[in-house]
Length: 131
Image 1 (cartoon, one colour):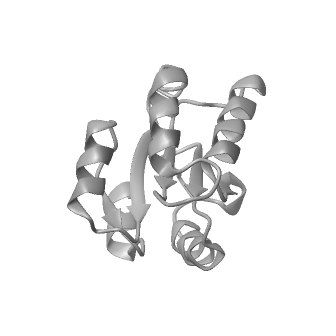
Image 2 (cartoon, rainbow, N blue to C red):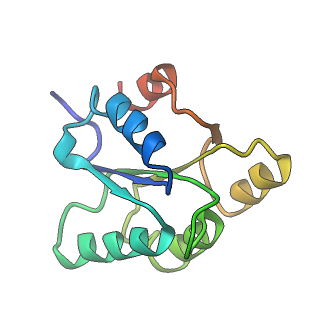
């Protein structure tokens, strides 16, 4: 399998959605390259660990839920751009949320997110990312 990313981070507190999204992503990315976290604070810790372990931080994809406990998607994205974007220069962040509120879409775009995806992640969209 020729994979175009070094890792994928799923940030979502919904275990069922994580299971579904992992099944879709595994068609394109080896399971060992998929990391799951249930809140933004753990997501930040994962990014720090990738940097400290000198893992390849260049090519990654982050799928980001908005409504999570401890640190929500907005807070995570703001911190990502403040402290991590330069280290993860070829990492794309895709909001993946059940919210279709235009205010959420606008706020995510203002924070520098890529295409806003309303759950669930579809096979078609995954094809456009990974193939």
